[in-house]
Image 1 (tube, rainbow, N blue to C red):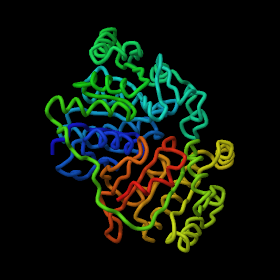
Image 2 (spheres, one colour):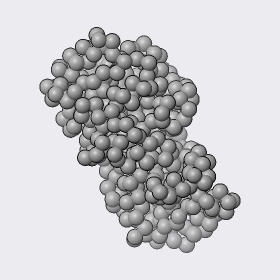
Image 3 (cartoon, rainbow, N blue to C red):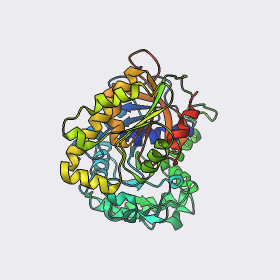
Amino acid sequence: MAILLGCIADDFTGGTDLAGMLVKAGMRTVQMIGVPKESPGDDIDAVVIALKSRTSPAEEAVAESLAALRWLQQTGCRQFYFKYCSTFDSTSKGNIGPVAEALMKELGCSFTIACPAFPVNGRTIYKGYLFVGDLLLSDSGMRHHPLTPMGDSSLVRVLQSQVQGRVGLAEHATVLKGEEAIRSRFRALEAAGCNFAVVDALSNDDLLAIGAACAGMQLVTAGSGIALGLPQNFRRAGLLADDRVADALPPTGGLRAVISGSCSIATQGQVAAMRAVHPSFHVDPFELARGVEVVAAALEWAASRIKDEPVLFYATASPEAVKTVQMQLGSEKAGKLIEAALAAIAKGLIEMGVGQLIVAGGETSGAVVQALGVSGLRIGVEIDPGVPWTTAITKDSVGRPLALALKSGNFGSPDFFLKAWSKLI
């Protein structure tokens, strides 16, 4: 097994996002759920190890990430990639900075980049400030995120508060000059004592140039956008074929369902669109806290409806409703109750015959794949930017391939839940 690129993602949907980008660029990619216990196969160019570490205590996130790195090192990876969200999600204590520094120390490298830009989904960086569409990050819906509210748009400032090393900036004027100018800026920042370069990016062309400038860089830290530019480095080195078909998946069948735990603005719109035309079941955190048998009720409700059309189970709510829940139940308790319930519903649905399942939200996706005992995902065709269909490496209880789409809360068009099925064979 000759793996070219070894990736560590801090949540499940983020891992799928990155893996999908690599597949689009012609790299045969497998996403592993947690640190693997087995080989992902012999026909793989890239491995993404998806952790559930974005909101973990920093020391736990560091330990899990180092374990993932050590496994990847054993496979002989030529380059490593720490992937975080395009909105640079983190708590006040990390985990982006602490994990990145720990990986650098383990690899013995002293310089890397930080670039969460993903222009096709409206995430751009200018003068070191992160924008979501036309809004600064701090003015976007991310300021209300229930677990990782982002109140500062300056990536230099945010990252500097999390790391011991120095953070510098590679501005857009340099990026526009191309690969060699970017490399020169990296060398200058490193010579000045910087360990990180936040890199501006406004377009896919910028990402391609930045990716080219990262050829030979031992560790890259970024959102999924930089993945556009890295595969071509391996092609230029004669390590990756030009004509590789990387997104082929086995045919899948079975019933169809959507499970949504994300409360992002994008997912709220997607839930509303599906509720307008398909049956939906609301998972109420207050009922869960009172001990109501919500999971049993949800599965009983589904039994008479799911054979005719896709069904939706959702805990998605407005920021105001989320705040009310957190105030009365506590943020951590509410999150765990909802994740556990949605994961149990997913398990029941698979036993009921669901073979094509969409899950919205990083934390929810993590809980679902763990409940289903999925050890890995083969990455297939893209539904929307950053969200591909996948098939589970392990099969469901009746032996069918299980199709999964794990969607980051912020991603996807308003009709995502309605159009996704048409992409499957």
